[in-house]
Length: 174
Length: 402
Image 1 (tube, rainbow over the protein chains, first blue to last red):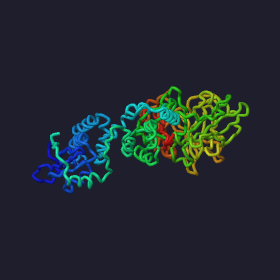
Image 2: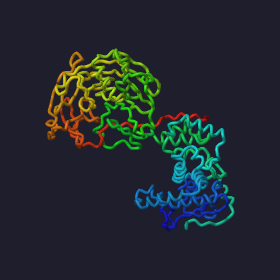
Image 3: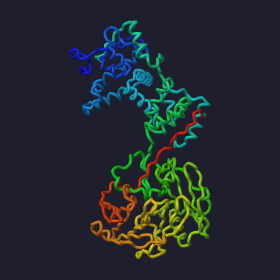
Image 4: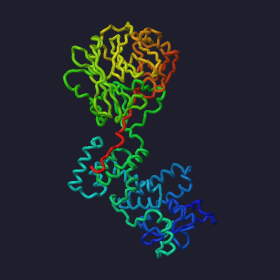
């Protein structure tokens, strides 16, 4: 992968930073990729995360962080080009394909991803996951939504409330 | 993943400080959500904001009480609305064959050619139209169901009296003319609005017997089609039935009825009732501002007749008569009658009409009645019919703790 141009110019070598997950796994990643996170960008601009220090992320476990970084690395080149005005249609299609496959994962991972994306302020990832979860809700009845998203079976009271709600808003069920 | 190299190492003290200074500035949550119910409200909101339709939103709200609270929140609803705007379910193409086309953007490129001056015509929707029936709202006055009292016309008004806000499913007003009693020709005007959700009687008058008869027969033919609407402005709706020399003027505000008289159409035998939609052949044209000249434009064979309301304000007198094929420089085709387009023209000035030599023609012609200038416009909306968009109810008023 080509080195992004946003490095600080020391002989073209991309600057690397180290991120440390909540379970103490260290991830070394290009600063440009990590900077997709608004939160990390501040630290990195301050010169943090280099050398042996690393930036600890106590809210993100290694499985989630690895997934987050997979996204950031893929999207970093386009982001470095300022929203990719000169990206080719092929590049954009490739990113789209990647995104679709990327969120084709277990629900529990989606939820930890959206929280990580929110905490790390990675706008694109947050939006991608939110859209995926929204797609799981779209076009379903309340009961189907509950089943799809792994709610427990409703108690009789909950069932009664659901029924009352559906009666009240009949136009949404016709 | 070649750029990520993992090295297991202990967390340094410096790193810990960095954490509390940077990443930890935002809310610190050590619990990783594994189910959607574990998601914090702010994250759930991000998901809900991406539900494109209020229908999905309402259904999600039904799923459980915490979601209901979130969706019912004023702030959330405001944000949802600002992201998605009004939800257009589809467009209803009015006309003799009403069709409802779901989820289409506004038909493109017809800015020059769609007229909403007569958009009030609420053609009640054919039963076969499944899509529309999903959105159907029963608005008949309850008395209408009893006995045999025909509806002379039902008209969709703007949502307010200024006429600036177009009507939609949540704010329409409907004006309805109904004949009460078979003998007296007593006609009553009702008005209902989506907001009040009830019918009020505006006015009751005894109609001239001939007029009442014609409208009544027309009404029986297709009871809830407001076929007779030939124009609307100056807070009035104008009705006409072929075979009649009278135009009925209905005041939208007061419900008052008055009659205007036309010179006879030489090609038509009086009392010869023809149920073809009269808007094809006759229009009442005027301005919304106070000092308007009221004109009737009608097509008689190949000619366009422009009539002007006389001094007394009761009778129309002939102003000019021109041959249409000659005016528009179109080859004369016998048996292919000219007609007004149901559309007219959206950007059409008040004194203009839009006509077409025949249904299959790809051209329509905009005629300025003052100057008789003609502009040729290509038809783009294939069915050249007025288009209404239907929106879902908003604001959602959800009961959070239902």
